[in-house]
Image (cartoon, rainbow, N blue to C red; front, side, top):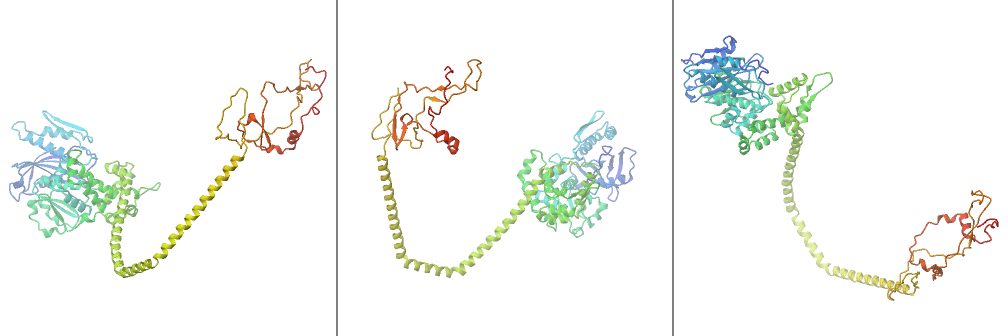
Length: 619
């Protein structure tokens, strides 16, 4: 659950100018406030102590902006934005539910400029104009005007990752702590350790605390969270519960190291991290390799010229790999609320992540994350933040890649074992089997020496027999070719047919004409008579078909001007010399077995069989 209040009614709750105490044992006090009717007692008592948490004068050389947090009864944060000036005896402070660090830091600078004037140095008009202005939507530019004063800003987008240099906190964190130590702090927060951050500058101190917590997105730190610890709360450092606390260097000097126990200590001034745990090593291999690969120095520097969000996005994507599959464990039954199955969630993730996730199920940051998601789903609001978008884009790909990397890692380990085992086995084999192999080699040499002549004779005999068989086969093939040539010479050759009006071609004696033996021979039957059976005629009177009158037709003899058909004898069969050049195709004779067709074929079409002519019929 995000610990920021949704939809606040005002840009800020109250403005306070706090005076610095003159004596060490005195407490800071409020010089002025706006609006005057603000009367929340808990806030009015706490703000002065957080505005001057300890003696910081010797370390304040420039204007210092820092932020503290107060928690209301609902567990929501109120952010206190403060401005310390060099040598100034007062501190400007604005309390708001909105975590708009850059916006309120700039607003405090404008108020300080107005106050430092010799004339017209009243900030009431500007405070009134800003207080009465409605809260703008994310990404909307705003301009607050009060007389000749103007304050312009753009409302930050909640669904946007912090980037460098736009995010003041992340920029300060990156300048103070290197990537390797960032990973240690990140891993410590995932294990919910007791974490202490120390620095001599309030701006650096609170920026590191806020930036480190922001890299847990989409989860939020649910335990004790104090960006800057006032001196009267120093006993919180010995609390046994998880916490993230920022402690100024002057206050840290009063704390014994033994009192901190196993707390993780980050010195933002020296870029060091002291811890008894190896939490980075306990992270799944996929997360570690992803963070190291994408947070290299060159990639981070190149990102500064572009979007600048590579640090925050890389940590978020590592959490996409880790908990992005939580939706696979959401259980839905009609008419009931959506629930989460922890064991199904663990089993749905790769084996290499399951031990870490088993422990993570008991972490409050993860439990609150699941509860928030279920609440949004059951209320019908849904969610479309950048984390869910990345889950939708990369879920299948990351699961497949994770399983592939897991398989590849196993194969590499198994290969190394086999390689080491193979070398050991081969060494043992050479030691144990060496004498036997030498003896076997000697025996093979003896056998080869003794059996050498016999093997040579066998090979020569096989060669001789092969040559003889090849010679006999070659002789038989030549004899068959000669017999075929004699047969072709003895067979008669048909003369070339001659047609009327067509010139014949002369052929050389060495190239006789080729006879097409595949075509059917022409069989000459009995010559046909001149008369054929008559066809039905027409009546000369009615000019209609007359069934009684059967006219006869006379078939004319072939024209005398046609050339006489020469016949030649081929294999005792008469063949028309006109058709000797033609290529015939065989036809199916299956119908020749029909008795009626056979009678029609063998019956002579003679004049005796023809019907008699009618003398009255005029031809």
